[in-house]
Image: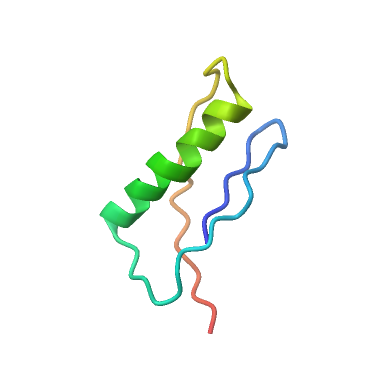
Length: 62
């Protein structure tokens, strides 16, 4: 699951990666380009945003 929360409190609906998908660099970048960037552009149409990844280790839910 990927969640984006902005400093003004706006948040993107959670994006769930397909079950069983091994998420690597290419898969992650694809979601940034096709899901996160369009959400940022529609939420902040003036382009007034900075994307910063928190480098949080992924959690595994069993």
